[in-house]
Image (cartoon, rainbow, N blue to C red; front, side, top):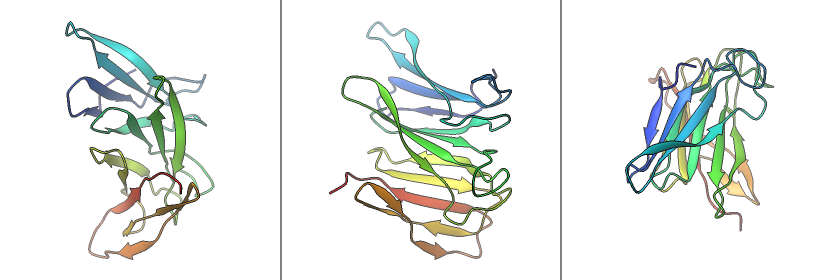
Length: 178
């Protein structure tokens, strides 16, 4: 499974997320996964959850990049070779959140706002400690920074171009719908 080419740790160090991009999941070769481990009060570690891409397909490499919020209750996972409406290997970054009962839910699917073939969106990901700001890189995509706002629960990006960067970043602010 090659667990661990991408890792993230909660602020308290009691939750760890590891990517396993070549994991064969959902009966698809190299669809990928990410695994969350929790530290028990006695200091031992155990797997608490396994994330798989909502639409995992052959060679998506979900888990290529991972991020975890400070509290360990929000996870962002890059699927760098995801083929989607943006194109072949356009990439994506699914976002997951833990509910008060401890269950996890897929809450958003982040795509490059101007996606194209081989953008590789999701090649790098980061989350603010609060879990309400996400940063997603795409090594093959357009050179821009996007800061979406949430309107009635929907993502609406707006952009600023930085032509000197050879990196595509999507800055995503996550907040509760009003």
